[in-house]
Length: 164
Image 1 (cartoon, helix red, strand yellow):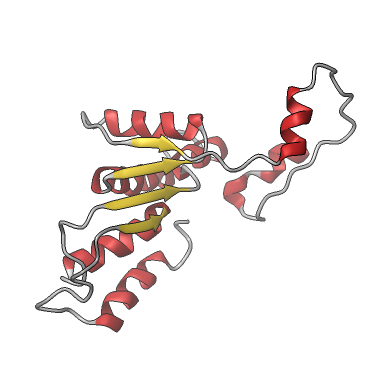
Image 2: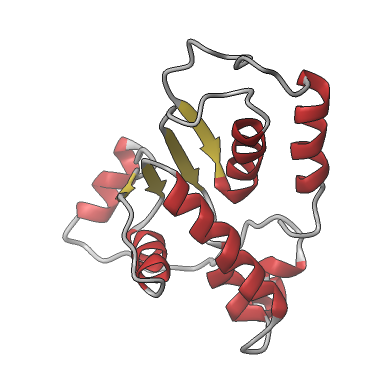
């Protein structure tokens, strides 16, 4: 997230590998990055000549930050604009983006469309255990007794809303 050491990670990677006249990974045929932070590292590596610009990238988008920030901050918040900028760059700079649900995929497509562009966003659904599938497909509704919230303790997750 914005408060993590994403910039230091990107700068440190380039510093560690050094700026090259020839790509460090010349045989690289595809790059896979996680979220906008991983794409930021890839961009820095491309800019420093460590990975050829022509190498396509797939972005695994585990969280749509601009959308989650919108839930916990006021409209027009700088964080939301920051995440939109970073996630748009990730989408436009990747040959494919994989989202974990339809809402996230739609949000990413709409975000890029606001700039008059398009990107290839597909869904990669997490595997569903057989017993959970059977429960979901059963015709008998089950009484729900518990509601659980399992989240990383971070202000962006807006856990207070769940508790309230």
